[in-house]
Length: 160
Image (spheres, rainbow, N blue to C red):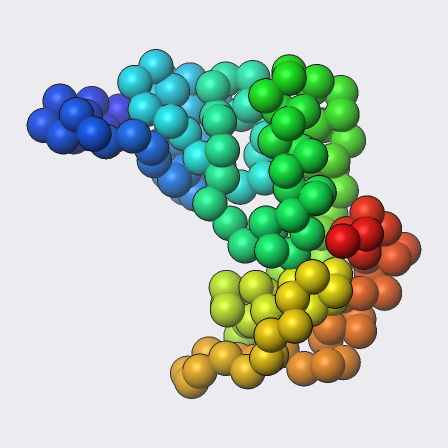
């Protein structure tokens, strides 16, 4: 709750940021606005158009190594208050997330598989696709499928 975050800030003055995931108070418009009055609110990039104007100032996600240029450019536009540009990018990011969830969540993919697959598909990372058990690993076929999706729906992700 906002009150709990405020109590943490009062007890720990160096409390600087909160990662606001889906289902948390900071990921709501009201919560983001209230929290941003005393702590930095970090969100998923796809929420930038909605929550950036309400005080969200950063993110904690793997998208930075899927394509640093796209991610850093988005946050520059958030910083500049260029909400029209931010909204356009967020629409593509939301479509990307919907694609990833629709194709891979039922197969058991979690963060580690998405992290490796996203970076390999963009060409930015040259890491192994292997995830340690019990986590599901992406395959080269998955990378190729995501790369094709990038090419059709979000070509900027291929420009690293």
